[in-house]
Length: 330
Image 1: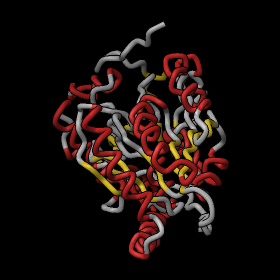
Image 2: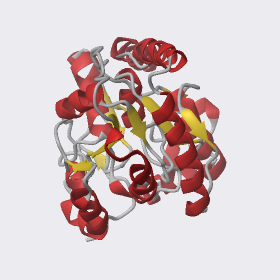
Image 3: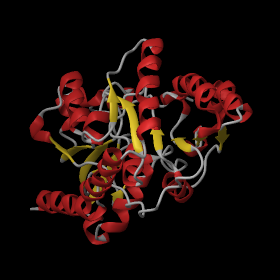
């Protein structure tokens, strides 16, 4: 059944107090994606008494608790139908603050929906740093793709097929991709052909959905996050974790990816034409494979890990959230 999108005056107001904190809805209760990782991480790190003073709503408004201050924590695109209510100033007045996960994301909300600077703040995502690990030098250069299939798996497989004809057993691709992570496994049906290609290829291992702990272990063994993104990322935890794990990140200059990767990615100009996109991705990815063990690349990856673990540190992010919440109570 399609969800009803609540307009500026339509969000129900709670008449009786309920437990405050980060709000669950019918989507995030069954999902284990980036938004849910952030919800779980923040909830663990902020004082329960402080959280109880707030209703923190991750992206999707289902109601307003009039007994608490309300924060809308936006993870999705400005074009998402569930964000449309923010184009109405009356709708925005229900919230004490709008929180965005990147400056690119906020800028799009500002342009598309007219969300003003004064009502907003950017608090980036955070991760648990991935423990330093000596990557295997014997054997193939391992590529990894660990996000949902609609974000560019088709481009990756087309390019990898060509690369594997040339490099043969000198490269290997691990694919961790399924909508099962969002509790929406039926959506996998439209990507069954891509998954079948993965399963039948001699130099690809298809893993489906695994725990985040298993992803971290895989990233420690991987050399390159091969991500020809065709999706507008508002942040990209997959890229952040790959950078923390010491992987080279190959991706286009699409949406928030330049901001998230902070100049460390091996980046190429995004092109809507998939053939042009694939050609550029091929060239940059092959360069990353050939140069991965070069001294210059290894030095850059060490600096990348240090910067990522500092900039996306949970202690830093929790302190920023703590400061925001306390300022709203003053």
